[in-house]
Length: 365
Image (cartoon, rainbow, N blue to C red; front, side, top):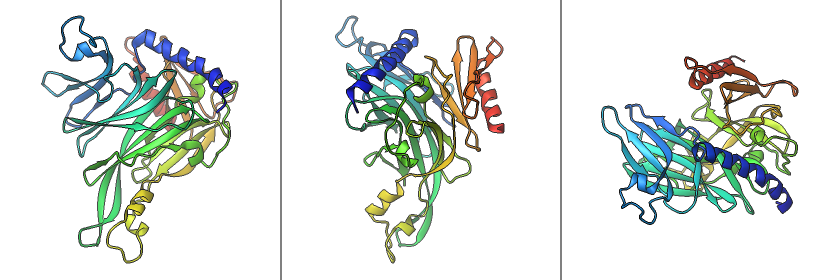
């Protein structure tokens, strides 16, 4: 990536991050999740001294961290530090998800390294943390706006006797925006198979390439918010797959992909095999991307607010964000000159209610 291009985009990213920090600390997108037993998991910015009791004025008491607050039904809250965040670097852009079968909490966040920021995940299971860095593309890089969702897939494997058996696995689908060689959305799946969390083989994929559109990406003339907020949601028409929407700057279109994975691992094994070899397991973790629609990248989406999106089964993306006392939204099939629609927020009509209505409207079209 040419330094002139990075220098041109960097001020916009810094301005967005600075504006958010001045208002409410690091960006916290989807930073809370409720488990089926009613336990509430919240991730939020804090100082080390807010989580751990230390003498006033102690060295490190003001170190910024991400904290996890766990509140179980009818019990006092418990607070702890998210793994990997106790350092002198700024964390932000948080997204969390909870996997019920194994009780696994997944926290995705970005970590600033000078003028660059990379992607990290922290996984909490049985009160024990483990972490993983997601390698960026080569060169200068900025990773922002992660979103994560968990789905369940039925798949066929060999049992101990070498016979086909149907199993279930959980798939954490992580998506984020990265400004590096090209400007593009990236995707990383993390699997829980046979009760084992496979964080040792995490691989990130460039969504432009997964969509078959390699080449130069160009954000010229686009507001930062119009292309830097990819989104992901479960695909109910598939076996554990997801729908993703992202700005494909190689084609200058909003791209929707259906992403799935092989669900019969026995077919990936050599003929006569009674166990799936490691190379076949690796192939089973390679995402399969199929186009589900394209649309316009919204030129009128120029805001410093966090932007979210929902995807209809017809492949239309609806973007929405809160701007002051209104929720605004635009669609990827709007005319280029169309203005954003808006819903006025009131004490009896919250952003949460407006979000539900916008999603319901999006699904009808």
